Length: 164
Image (tube, rainbow, N blue to C red):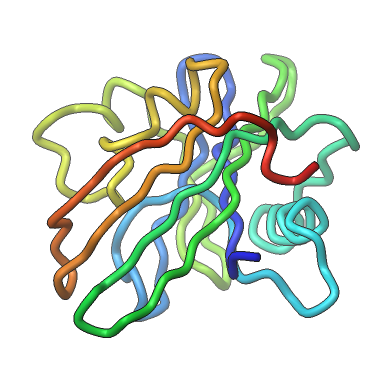
């Protein structure tokens, strides 16, 4: 079991992103999520993280499982990862941003801004977000790091949902 969860909360052509204040990924925009607590399933964890970081209570069944993101750094001999989810909010749902929280700043970002090739303020979303949002296949998106630099990336189709 991996240590983390992440969710991309989508509404039309935009996604709610969090610019984190904690030293890990400080100043970088990413989806909402965090560490799985002892005894939690990934689904329970992402519901809790969404509630804690945004105040939203998503209905059961509103999250779609979209595979995993895993990473390794051979220099340090570790492997970890996170379970990926997507939630689609109806157009009628109102969530005002920017919003300062304990975790950082939440803001809606247009997909064109997120996926722009010159955008350097994101947490490696350019490698997988398009497929996470649009592909019916779930993947394990595998990163190899040397320090903070991505030195390898592959995606492997998953034959079945990770959580079943």
